[in-house]
Image 1 (cartoon, one colour):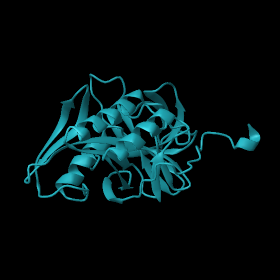
Image 2 (image 1 turned 90 degrees about the vertical axis):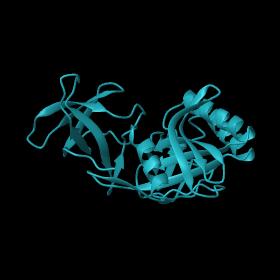
Image 3 (image 1 turned 135 degrees about the vertical axis):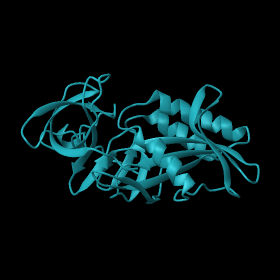
Length: 248
């Protein structure tokens, strides 16, 4: 996935879930659209270096989108529309492997409804297998551990429950975490943020739903699926936005 018309700026403040202010290299302050409704407190810090995309339009309230933030020595992409595109691209170029699939994928279709959920991807194979993939972007990181979610998600919990139902109905079923940064050793569920999601994922795994995680190579202009990363449900993730227990 390549971006055009990108430029770097410094973050000033996030005014609400969708709007922030940044300072361009010439000192001009601009209003930008934040392409991620998650909290991002550990990323969107005053003076953080960010990547903007210039995309003016008479139908838009802003002329810039906020795409990525530099954290330490790496870029973390926060474009919530990107993971689905990367997942599709990764399946088509076979950088993403689906355990249990035999034969080539003969059909990939986005946004297919099962029960009360519209899953991100539906696929069929040459061996008459059918399956669903729910894609989740992961941007929360601490000490090279990636975690999901960074804010409670009832929608995500519902998707995991109904993926379990789809597996029991005979479909191959997958949760695919697209980790929108590169420096990561493993991925996990942020249980302290949403214990019920952890329980839903645990039940899904017991019932045969595969949970996959892939990291990405991220630069200001480009994001590429890199490699499969281990997923460990109960890894003790430490939220970088929470103070140490001794100081609470």
